[in-house]
Image (cartoon, rainbow, N blue to C red; front, side, top):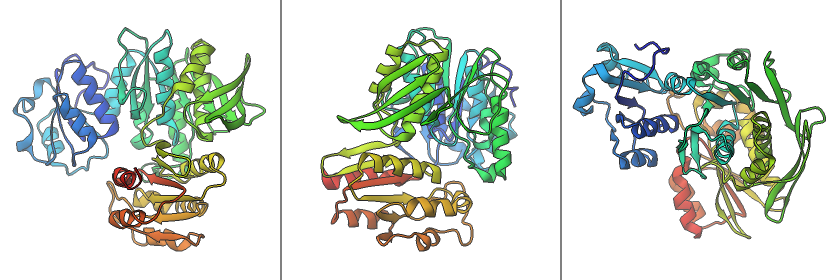
Length: 459
């Protein structure tokens, strides 16, 4: 096991176990750009793995030592990177462990890469992907520049990785709380968007979850800043600025949110005055909050108001984060990664604000048995706000079933008349005969496989 304090300079080959993950694939691209030899394993082919293969990265999809390229079977110059989602009985991972390879988690590698720069780390149960992408885009438009490792495909970059063409002091990283990964980072400044409990299979209690974020906040460089949404139970001894929508006390406040002339707009109070009629390229109350966080961080970096405004208006969002699939006068189709009740609430609030007179149909795929159990009542409450609901079976990911935790259990509690439980094929068949006014696909599993066939129904 390599000491995480060491550098990466002793290696020129890297093998990924779980290479198709959104965070892992960004690292794979990074090392390929650095002219390392890169290969890896993943369970199933996806668009991400196809993209990696197109740039010369060898990938296989069977957990088999014989499938590992021969050049990676000599361990003196090979770094092994794995994701915590990989099970402990994984054959390849255990082979590398048994043969004393240098093995690191993804978060440890990201910590090594970012430690040599001024890392701006964005954390939070919700909003971190959009906020880190928005912040990266703003920095890329400024005189400062940045490198960025993102947890989604930022549309402006068409990638989850952005590398500045010239030298830059700054690296933006998405700080993942899962498995306490964010505690491996060495942030210069941070943004914390939310601390709604999640991953209770890891943290075991809400108090432990919040404690993890407090530890993360303590890692900030004394010269850096903590930007935090007002009201979160996180105290810090470092320089701190707060932000919130419709607040009388936050350092940065958005008010007069509105949707006019096809654009989402807001006015912003800052410590130095007002920014009136700020236009956002991505709509929604939650995105107003994300934009505020970026404005606050940009304020500490002395980025001009002109660059802030341009970046916020021309930011195109992140794939699967309030992503418009179809936007027509009589029909709107939005795809969103929301998989926690708070995220679903923000999504539905924003859609109701944008389309107050339209009937909203949501297709929801619960993600993880444990999350469904832990937030069961929240899912019932938020999904009951839809006009029509289609529930899919729970996507298990890394988990085994939990007795009594099923989509049927949620379905029976949902308090709306138009509700169905359908699988993938039944959904396609249903919408070949029906067109809603507003359709939402919601979830973090493989619900995205529905997007193209549904889109083809109407285009």
